[in-house]
Length: 332
Image (cartoon, rainbow, N blue to C red; front, side):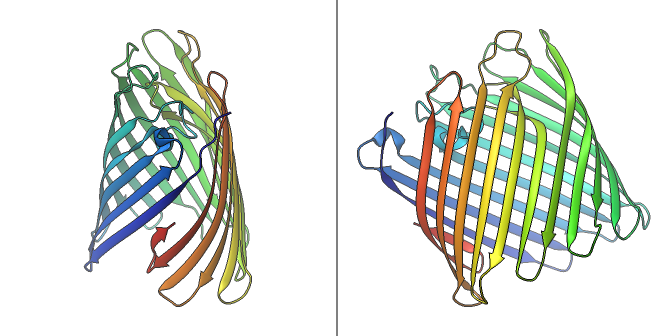
């Protein structure tokens, strides 16, 4: 097993301007990683995102645009798991949505999104450029002060430059949000989904369950989900996730948090033979110190291990110190 040691710096900056009805936010991030013995592991990741929100009397409009330029050691961890080579990945994403208040209890809305992903010099890595578009509509009912129901219908299309047919996906999701007690929240969702191409078709269920509790001194939550999502292989995957999170205030200025994630990704529509079956686990522990209302310091330990049946096992461990000023972060 190959090993490499290095350092990483992460800088995040955001600016928000707001009026009575409109807010505009600009977020940017820069992350640099350098390794002493393996230059192939070096990373230069950057992103820029613009968010616009307009609130009318009975409606709300949103628009989001994001550009990402990172490396496949970042983009393919926990997705395809293809980290044998380190190539440049570029992504452009755009989305527009609207929500309309029909009555005091009923809300309806829609969202249209599109993403384009490009991999540079990745001809022999199994990665391929792809475009993914999705449209969804929903209706929501506020049944009571403690219960809310919604029904979401969506359709999407995945097109890749590789010699694979276009993939279509359709889903119908019923969601329920319930507050059984003052400090508890339950989110549950389930529905059918159908993926198909010219050569194959597969149906099944997508679902999610999230149970959490918050208090003055801390919070915890447990969540599990199954969803279908596009990847750099130019195919949809079935993504299973289990997440545990807990946070606790040690005193007025110190708090500690722990998060664990376990996942499994499997390729759908495998008429040509399965290329992806990835399992991974991630654990992160963080100690936070509030120096003032604007200034916070973080100390983080993190580790991730993934195992792809078709490639080598990979691990990544890190120790970082971060400083946040008004919510904007700098990590070393």
